[in-house]
Amino acid sequence: MKYICIDIGGTAIKYGIIDEALCFTGEGTLPTQAMQGGLHVLEEITSLVHSLQAMESVAGICISTTGIVDPENGIIMEANPALMPSYTGLHIADALTAASGLPCSIENDVNCAALAEYFHGAGKNTASSLTLTVGTGIGGAFLLNGRLLSGHSFSACEIGYMHMEGTSFEELAAASVLVRRVRMHYPESADSIDGRWIFDQAIRCKNEFCINEIQRMCNYLSQGIANLCYTLNPEVVILGGGIMHQKEYLMPLMEDGLTRELIAPIRSKTRLAFAENDNNAGMLGAYCNFRMRSSALH
Image (tube, rainbow, N blue to C red; front, side, top):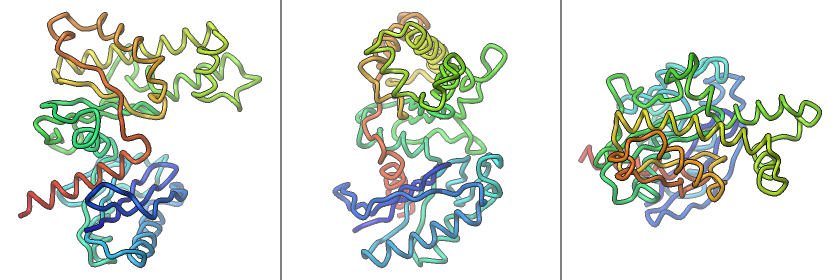
């Protein structure tokens, strides 16, 4: 059996066909064109589904998406209108099923990343895992005994909004904030500064400002994660997002930070890990979600 997997992000839509051995074929990306609105995005992924159906015989559609999702009814409950207008309220799953004749599941992208890590990554064989994706904002997902903690209105672990120091967790610790602060310090080079540039400066050039800014980000990440650990008590905390590819540099900073912020009995029982599924995490997690929901229905 093969399945269509689509990961809808704010800037790009990733897609591919997965088989039961977790091998992807027909992979690609296309621009989301989010500012053209939710209906345009739905039209694009419907056309994409038809194209992928023509390539392979498939048994279902697995969707990972930005926004707060009602996975029971396949609805986008909330999406930032400044980033993707009119996406909120769309019945994505029903629309794709009607267009393709295939069953469709849909889940929030961070939840999908957490499922990918639980079944096929850093969270494997754990009873409880807390996954954070650190990028433009900060997303979170918590699994207990293989089940997502969704909350009453499907918005559990919207951790980026947590209040810290008069602002939010993500306004202090997101990767985008690190980049913004460094660009402000080097306005003449702002257009060329991204996460890679900052870590290159810190590691290769021993740039003290960049070193301090990375440390600042890790300090706030550690504080936020510690608050979550006091509440959820996960067995493992998994860090994902593009910036976490700098594992060798960040691991000791984060380990030290959690040691400072957590009391010893909790720290000694809390493992820190980095996500293992990289760019395919959303699609792989969407497939895991589809299979879990299919099993629950039978």
